[in-house]
Length: 176
Image (cartoon, rainbow, N blue to C red; front, side, top):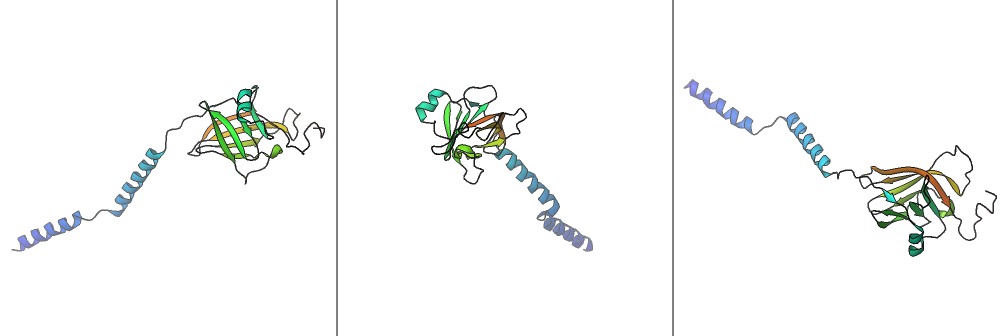
């Protein structure tokens, strides 16, 4: 009889233990599951390579407003054109429009240092001028294009050339 009571108690104990999990083990499994979902929800990285904006594009879309143009080193056509309200970049054959981030620093020609698009954004960063010859309307710069996951999708060095708005002195008029 004692033996059957012990056996029944052992069986009951093992049944009640089945419903309980080790909290540390459950937390570790939960962390693993969350990490896996985060990895799976990120889209794979795809570099973005902007194409030059041609003179035909500038005339067709009226992009000759006062502002700034970023050119890669050695290129005649810009890959980014920006003014006080918007910026433009050609990606995969389409001319993409970016809104000027008003909280970012202002450049000559009333352009801004940051422009935000639907799924990407552009930063213009001034670089030191080791060769000389730059002024407030022309300087070496770096263009950084970020993707929707906040990764750098394109980065290149070049130069920024700005044109003054009507009523503002140009670099030639100020002796720069």
